[in-house]
Amino acid sequence: MPPASALAPRPLGRSRLPVSTLGFGGAPLGDLYARLDEAQAVATVEAAITGGVTLFDTSPLYGHGLSEHRIGAALRRVPRDGLVLSTKVGRVAEPFVGRGDGSGYRGGLPHGMRFDYSYDGAMRSLEQSALRLGVDRIDIVLIHDVDVWTHGAAMIEQRFSEAMDGAYRALETLRASGAVKAIGVGVNEAKMCERFARAGDFDTMLLAGRYSLLEQPALASFMPLALEKRIGLMLGGVFNSGILATGPVQGARYNYNPAPPEILARVAAIEAVCARHGVPLRRAALQFPLGHAAVASLVMGAVSPAEVADQIAELSQPVPAALWAELKAEGLLAADVPVPA
Image 1 (spheres, rainbow, N blue to C red):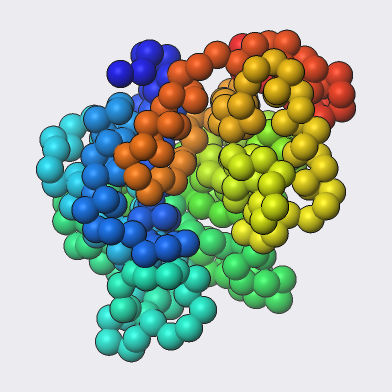
Image 2 (cartoon, rainbow, N blue to C red):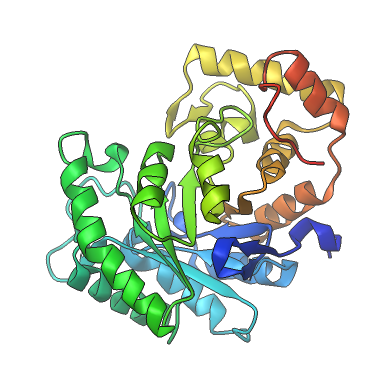
């Protein structure tokens, strides 16, 4: 078992829900990059539970419901007490229309998905998720993918209005009734996190890729606001789609695409500093975001028990303060960026 500090629970913003420092992200269990054996998928979730992970995040999008099925199968094998389950709304499954092309998932269920950020759409989405998961309660519900990345600049104003007028009101109702414990958004853009934070009363936000060892665009404006409003952050994409795990190797990916030369060069410089301190790049990348007080949990995907064990091990190993100091001295981190103590 890892040291207690490796997965020590942190309160999730104003909700005070205790969540493990390392969370489990369910996107890969939806056959995101490759078809995954069913038994291996369930065993991966079980390994996370055994290792001390208590936060499990999924979405109807992930494999068009397959991730929820697999996480539910694993959770049914263990006592639910102490485990925190998170899913998302904003898409509704249509089981009889077919998936069509362009889902981005190699496998998954043969069901279509359509955007629906209305009040009724959010309620229907959550009902479908509960059925796929096989549960009678879901702790955290996030409004999913209301960002320019997903909808484009021409549609973002309409989608934001739909979400605030519809899905947000639905989640407020559920929270007020005690049906869910925390509500938030899950997006890829810090600016949209900030916009939602100013427009509504949210407990948490899941932000992917915008606060990492490589780049910190969320730091200037959104993260101070999160502290002010006591919004607990779940961070995804701390490896920026892979390059901070693999290093600047041929074919390294950044933001879901091949990394451009300037990103490869910056990561190479960071990796060189890490090497001088005897620290693997992935360890530094995993631990860096935990230096910010607004961050409650790192939501990390995995496709095997070994991958889960590796993440836990990397969180358990020390990173010397001198490494962070040298990154700042080399201009690879700004002087005022918070780092782990």
